[in-house]
Length: 234
Ligand SMILES: C[S@@+](CC[C@H](N)C(=O)[O-])C[C@H]1O[C@@H](n2cnc3c(N)ncnc32)[C@H](O)[C@@H]1O
Image: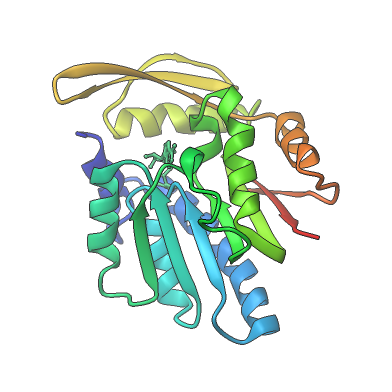
């Protein structure tokens, strides 16, 4: 995947795209606040799931900050999982597995996590008919009083659209279509042209998935270019 190197460069200290790095940092800061709270209640040994962890940068940053917590990452792309395993290998509190979140055996990751989260518009990269299933697997994975957090791009926001134009171009995708709700891109992968659609969920859509899970006290926080939908399991 040719765009990966740019994604990786953007996350380094000398990033050529500081606005993107700032976005990753904001995600980490917010999630770190939730983990701190959980650790304060429980002291140690909390379990955290990064569903669809990609190359594992969020996990690495959180794992470095919170040595007392156990982190698990899951992704169905074997290249990304290998990279995530390499960059997190110095940290003994992180485990990364190759797993399709939509076909987890029912015994796996059931009532096990204190926090289950997805970052960087993961939900919007799934087809609409799959999104609820992804979220319900993340929810199934958490224990009673565990937290569920999902981070998506703000929709209907021109600043975010302008930022995304720069971002997709920076990582080497050709933009076919972009508006305040979605981006359609083309990228070349191993000589094959792929088309991908990244949607930006409306607050109504986000809330409706939580409601379908029986969660009424959803909290939606704006952080920079993103929305974080957050709730606890009763
Ligand atoms: C928008 S990327 C976000 C990656 C990462 N969370 C980050 O912050 O960079 C979505 C990720 O979902 C993964 N993914 C897509 N479908 C999946 C599935 N069915 N099961 C597990 N992971 C999946 C992709 O491989 C990709 O890494």
